[in-house]
Image (cartoon, rainbow, N blue to C red):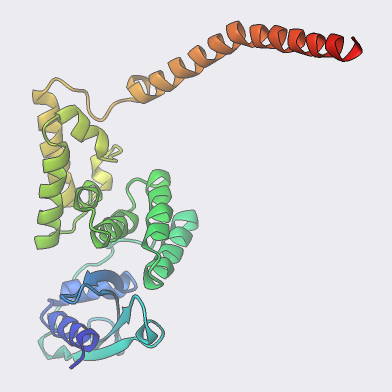
Length: 276
């Protein structure tokens, strides 16, 4: 079996072991995208789609996996595998799902759709830039935070992946590895580490696993005597930018006239020489 087909089949087997709540979440979120690097060092984009066969929580659930190579003809003709989860072991009473994540809307939703297209086409750098803008516009967007972490992870930048995954409900070995790398790069300076977390209050806007991590960061900030997250008035980066702009204006006001006078003198000198 070819490498890409093996990845697709293995992912189907993994999905068959998921519980119903996780599978239903996969349906409600419109699937998932992931990037893996195979032992051959080749990169593959994994796209998973799932849906209920008939009525939600009253029927079977099917899923399809597409694995696209980053180059070659398999970039245009992906490997495929599919599976079906029989509804014989469904819970007697369907769970309450109205607290599930809502699809992103507006500019963030468009950025996510385009970023997913970029990932599928192998343009990870472009997806990273789109998603960075989406997170700045909507810091609590779980879809944007998770996908941005996935893109950084696929690019091999584990600290940056941990920087965004720390604010999500995502867990697993890849998250643990990324959070450890984040801590290794910025953990020696609590203040610097806190600046790298794109957190915006209130904490209630984040899922429970993220709130636990936020609480741990808040404890570290309190122990270090740091106000976190900073209020708008305590934004040191704005103060630095303002001071830099004021200094630039002062330098221009002092040096600018001198440059103008020197230029005028040089012009007069050249005219006199030309006449003479």
